[in-house]
Length: 369
Image (tube, rainbow, N blue to C red):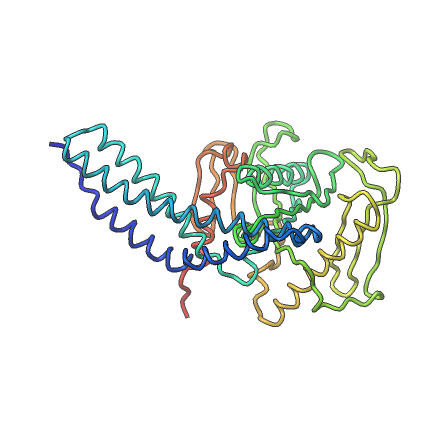
């Protein structure tokens, strides 16, 4: 007779799933889907393209969330049946299949549980990610570009639309900075735990004598804000410069002065935008992003929660939240959560869910008084 007692594991799954179900509220989600479907069926909806996209995006997300919950519940039921069959038939193959399904279900329900923790004020919004190279010369600018690719690959794996808003290329390797928008529900809540200083240690490809080099890059994540009407920005507080968009190595990709740089003089916040084709479009996009950052700064000051949304990121020693070791042990380790991966190649290729999920749980941990 085979030994297959998964009753405690399945009960643990059911307990976790019951908590998820209470938070997600499938019945309320169905009502929301019905309301959104009614809006989507209105022939006048597409007269306002921006609103239509919001409605269809919200509908798609709600349907996907409901499908995940319903599928998970069905898989738990199926797992119980599979265990019963394995025992009745004394079938080792079915028993092995049940154990494999248990492991897959634990991961799937774990991911669902993490999603229920995204209940912050801005967590449902899309994300604007800015990466800046820090200390470390060419290795740092190269590292900044590696991080940019890592997050873009993460978004691509999930099917999230991405728009690169601005990139400043380094004279040598890599980039000085980049800003891109990930347009998907809960992208901000998910990626906000990635904000901080990232550290890379490796044998430098730019140095000599196989010297080990440590370099840094800062990642900032803020939510996409539709409007920031609460923030009044006097014209005298702005310095607006226009310049030509450029690509790698300073190569011009635009023969007109369409790129825009806006400096908010009182705070020193600088926003550059060169993604759009016209100066007017770039200025409007830059103003929207500036309003977003000023609104967040205002809320941080009012609530005394500056580090929750952005914080001060120095991109240097003593401030790192994750280290990437590309020599010897080959390891990526999060210094806050302790989560680590022994395969940096897959991490840089966008395999970040383990780090992100651990970060979300860490952020929600009980704190001592």
